[in-house]
Length: 519
Image (tube, rainbow, N blue to C red; front, top):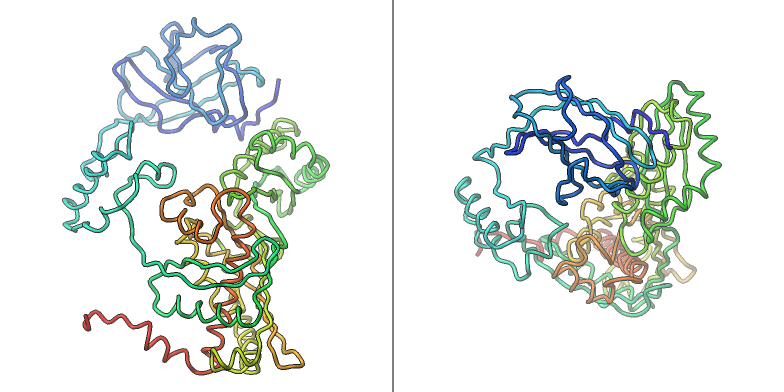
């Protein structure tokens, strides 16, 4: 029998699930602990009144409801993350809040008792609610209903949004309330000559953007790199985090927990591996403050970005922790304490790595820079030194020019999570002049979050963009990371040279103007 702390037990109830149905009253609980078997329901109270158990039926995740007397002798399978729906054959409830008390036996936990208060859900659909179909929300009928709804409610014509060339069914798991598609211009820059550990050769890079001069700028930078012998790239770190926090009565208890935790890394690796075979726990950091123990679970996630994977693995690990530590000491627990700094730039990820840590480096030939960019390496070198001081004064997360431009354009084109640009665009630029006045230039991206599998990478146009670079599917994420870093460096060279040669404003004026009055 495993102990379940109150911090976890009170979260089993699926809030807002209480409602009236034709057969009586229904609510649900969710298995947020670990794989289990439901063996018996011992008692159930509704607003203090005992509910006759012979009038109770239950089902797991939409299976055929069973009466309690029909439960198998070895119990009912109750997998992690699934809902157990209880149907009570009682009179309908009135509006407002109601008290529920439930006691049941579940292996491997033994007897679990929870008491909650929940408000009855009337189930009435408000006229301003966006149409949806719980059975098939990606079919042509419901998509058409949403398109008509938006036109009726807003008066806007969505002729272009409503046009797309792929089966909406493939977006299941990527978007809800599917109504259409956003069409973003996409250009190709290249070839980018990469001499990496995973990417070796010349690559054409898709860039989806609405910013004039951007593709042309990266194209020029790639030409400089190619004529200077290519860009060397290396992935030098690989981490993905989830950062739970555990709360205690006092700081001493938090310290005891940290001491206990650091001795059990190997066991936590086993637990995490059982949750997902593509996830590997590397190590766990901990940070003590006040009466809290903040942790950072560090994983590798294969070719996926892995946020959901590490969330699932860390949750399994935390369940094991709460069931094996002296749980009475844990006063509260949260799966994420903002220390992973998801979708936020942070110093901890600059130092410790989130996603892929990639360095791209090139020695730019002085003559090539003069011929292609009409700029001198000495100018570019001096500008980088002065701009680094400006970055320090501003508190920016990057002492380069515009890493976010390349990363955002590639992310949109290839189906990455674009919000990760917030952390992925962190960069460390370094330059030095050689004896021949050539310019050594490198950029290190310490938290580049990319994937070639999962998320939006399997969508129609996004998978095509990955195929252009031979970066689609398993075994390609390191190659993709090196190409992204090389593209970033091309942009640093190009924009740095444009600023140094006073060509920046004139280029934007010539190529980046989009004056609707002139059309």
